[in-house]
Amino acid sequence: MDVRFRFFLIALMGLLVAVVWTFPRWYPLLNEETIAESFPGLEIEAQASFLALPQAVQNALLLMRNGDEDLELEPRPELALALVRARLLQDDVVSEQSLNGALEPPSETALRDGSFRTLDPLRQAEGEVTVYQRADLSRVLVIGEDFRAMRAPDVHVILTNNPDPLDAIGVGGDYIDLGELKGNVGWQTYEIPENVDFSVYPILVLYSVEYDYVISTATLS
Image (cartoon, rainbow, N blue to C red; front, side, top):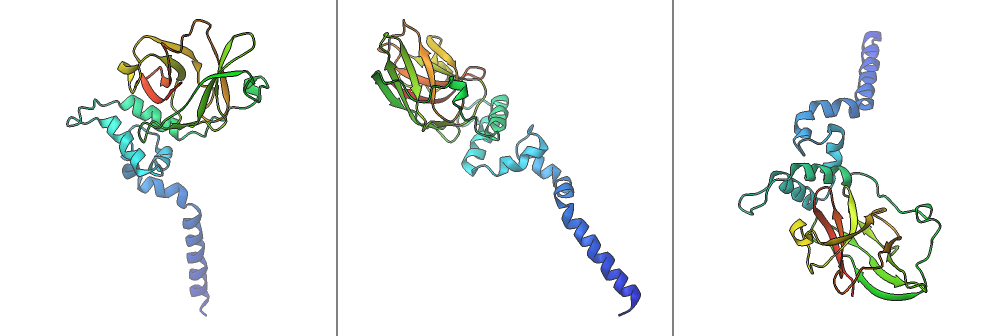
């Protein structure tokens, strides 16, 4: 084999190796415009992760961002972007340390219980919730270890008197805030104020206070 031809083959193989090795770096640059259009405003390095979400979720997020006159949906680009970023984060699993070592729900009387429900492709939650009364008559709300919800910014656990609070209007201004959600996965507890009457406030809501956005609800009966 000619020495020059052999040298050419070696150089060509080296070039191919370099191209393959650096593929993750240069490929996004060639496709930056296309990828950036997937979800406007989202960081370029996160666009591929957005495209990996289920198609129904992508469509719902884009619909929220852009709105729809025919469906009478106002565009909410800031909320949509916040939900995308939150959804791409890892689950925030509640640990025993964050619960001060409380590993089991209290053994006192169970007063009420319910289950979180999924409202649409963006507003998803599941798991059981129970209200217990201790021997000293204080009460605690326990979200079970099977709990899992979509991530969102500034989510609080609230009680409301509206039987079907699907949005900020449904939640209204008359609600009781039990505190910020401690994590979107796992067992957690919330103290219930002494004056709470569950016959008046029977609906538990996971509610983004910052964006007036309902994540999920559970009827405590």
